[in-house]
Image 1 (spheres, rainbow, N blue to C red):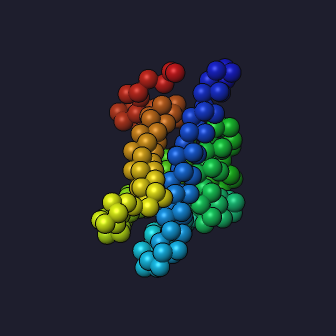
Image 2: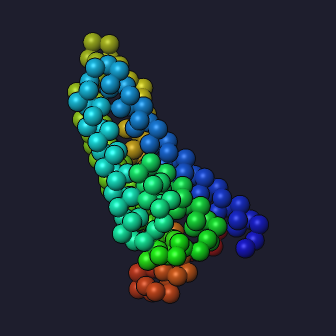
Length: 186
C-alpha cells in the first residue's frame, strides 16, 4: 500500500475515532451535569441509553464470534477503536469471527448510531427544551455540545460506514448490484 494511501487511511480512522469518542465524552459530561444539578432521572435515562448501546455492541461481538477482547471492549465503550484498528491494519479476523473485519466495523458503527447517537439526540433535545433557563436565556454548554456531537456523529458515521462498505473490494465482488457506486480512489 502506498505511503499516501496509508496516511489517508490513518487520518480517516483518526477522524472516525474523534467523532465517536467526542460524542461519548460529551454524553458522559451531560450525564454528569444532570446528576450535579439534581436532575437524577434525566441523568439516569441518558446513562441507561449509553449502557444499553455498550451491551448491544458486546452481545453482537459475542454472537458473531469475536474474541473476549472485543466483547469486553463493547462493554467498556471501546469497540469502535478495536474494530477500526483491525480494519485499518488489515489484521486477520479473530479465529472464530464469522464476518470480515470491515463488516464488523460497519455493524459497530451502525449499532452506535442506532442505539446511542439517535436516541441521545432525541432525549437531549427534549431535556434541553425542558431545562433551558428562560429567565437568563441560557443552557448548559455541555448539553449543547453533546447534542451537536450526537447529531454530527449520526450523520457522519452513516456516511463513513456506507462509503467504507461501498469501496470495500470484498463487498464489491460479493454484492455487485449494491456496492461499487462510489469511486474507490482518493
